Length: 183
Image (tube, rainbow, N blue to C red; front, side):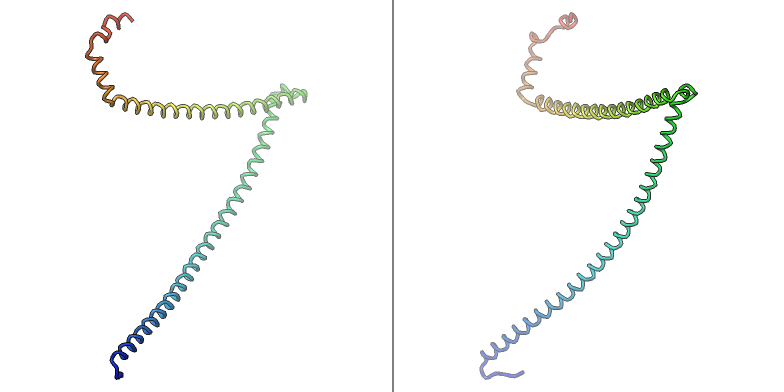
């Protein structure tokens, strides 16, 4: 190891060299860390892309299945609606009672349609009333709970306790058994 004639100069040069080595090591470490972080980030992005691609494929498959099922159900509804119409028309002319005249058959059909509409309206009104009754019951339960808590707090008050004890101790204020039987 080389020596300088002046020991102070030697310490300064070695200190500068150490600082330079530390700085270069720090920069090299940051560079290596940045490379590894970039590599890790790239790997995670690839994994995420693969996952997203899988989810997209699954979503598209499910969407296709649901669209097919929806189309099938629409066809079924159309077929059932047609059959219901045919049954209504048959019921309107049922038994030969209304088959002689088209007006009677049409009137019976109109009555059947009106009856169905009234039944649907009645059902929806019953559902509405059921919900209102349920809401009223919940509100009643809530208010009962509130009153119970209020009474509990009121009965725990020392002034109320002393007043109740005073009334119970005073026989003049209490109604007699004869008063209660007369009522």
